[in-house]
Image (tube, rainbow over all chains, first blue to last red; front, side, top):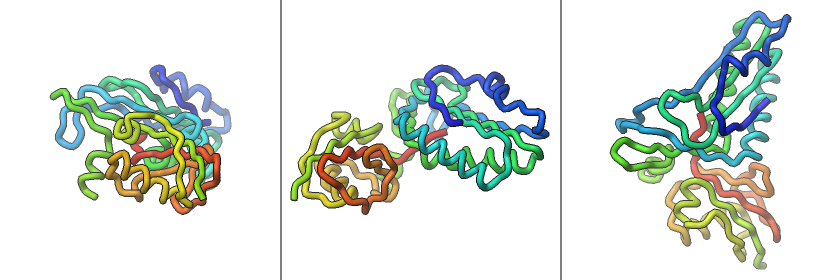
Length: 142
Length: 81
């Protein structure tokens, strides 16, 4: 299940949907907003997403993870909007019989989500400037 | 032959273009050609390889052909997570 939300992500609530008597392992990942990036002091992050395709592509990624690793359940929730330092921007939760596939599927999902979903983040810096992550620098680096 | 294409811009592209969508008339035969045409007009400098495109709400390749009436979504480099 892939879901886009604008309200706070609460992993302790989301992981309940993965509880399964057949599961011996749970692996979770939370992506948090940190206060520094590439030497800049970050005040907050603004996420923009194109939800219809973010959900569609996220479901594809989860299906790929399930095809590669025998897991029981795999969910991902990504938040959009203005986020403050320390808030959770993305959560991935995987339940499986054994730990190996839970770790591997969780890693696969977050890695692919970061490079494939139509989601953008704008960093707002302490000095008042702002910039789209991966954009300004990729343009200047060619 | 000219086609009428509905284009939507996101994030940095929207800010560069100053609009979030427009209807364009173009002779571009592929999504890549259309992107080259529009970024020249809107002053975006991101390399094509870092950007993504969707046609009619499906992720597509830059060499995908365009048809009259298509909806094209132009995505600058993504940064989820």
